[in-house]
Image: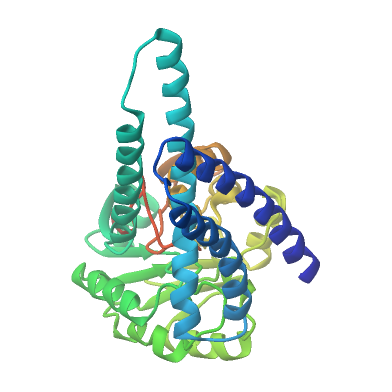
Length: 373
C-alpha cells in the first residue's frame, strides 16, 4: 500500500509539474504574469498546491480534521482548474500559430485574460453544481417486478463520499430530497463514505431520518475498502440501514441482493451470485456498486441491477474516458434479454456526491426514482 502510494505520488507530481510549467510559461508569454512579484506568487502557489494535496490526503487517512479538510478541498479543486488552464494554454498556442501563419494580428493578451476568466467561471460553476442533486426518474416495464412494485417508489442513490469534502450537511440535503420522493424502498449502491476516517455517527445520522415503507438497503463500494476503521464504521451504518455484503434480503416478495465490491470477471461475479442462493424464478433487485460486470447479472436473470461508481466521469474530459471504459453501462437505463427469455434491466446512476475534487462539470449529481410498470 505504501509503495503503491509512493509510486502514485511520484507519477502524479511529475505530470502535474510538467502541466504547471506549461501553464506558467503561457501566463508569462501572453502578458498575464508581467511582474516578478506576480510570477513568484503564482510559481510558489502552483508548486505548493500539488504538494498540499498529497500531504492532506495522508493526514486525512488517519485524522479527522476540519483544518485539514479545508486545505485538502482547496488543493483538490486546483486539479481540474489546472487541467482547464492547460487546455486554454494549448488553445492559445494554436490560435497564435494560425494567426501568425495567416498574418492576422489578434489581441492575444485580451484573449488570454478572457480564457482565464472563463476557466475560473467554469470552476466556480462546477463547485456549485456539485452541491445541487437533481431528481432523475426512470419508468421500467418489468412483468417480474410489477406485481410487487407497481405504483411504488424505489429511490436510488450512490457515491455520497462522506468524509473529507462532504459532511453531515450534504447528507442531510440528500436525505431531505429522498424523503420528498415519498419512497417505498431506498437503495444505496456503495461509496457512502469517501474512505478516510471521519465522525461516522454524526455524518451518517441523517440516514436514520429516511422515511421509507420497506426501509433502506445499502451495499458497500470500493471506497469503503479504503477506510481504516471498519470496526467503527460498519456497526454504525448497520444500525441505520439493512447492510448487504454478499447477502440477500427478501423485501416485498422480492430478493434484494447486495454484492460487495470486487474487481473480477463476469464469471466470478455470476459465481458469487449463485453462492448466495440466487433464484432466477423470484423477482430480484441487485446492488452492484461497479457496473463493469452488470451483464453477468442480467444474463443470469436478475430482474433489475442498480449501480453507481462511474460518477459519469464527474468532469470534462474525464467523462469521455469513463464512457470509453464502461460504454453503455456508464450511465442510465439498459435493457437486456436474459436466460429466462424475458427482459432484465440495469440502471447506473451518476452518483450524488464527488470523489477527490469537489467539482462537477458536464455531469450532474443525482437521486434516482424508479417507477415499475
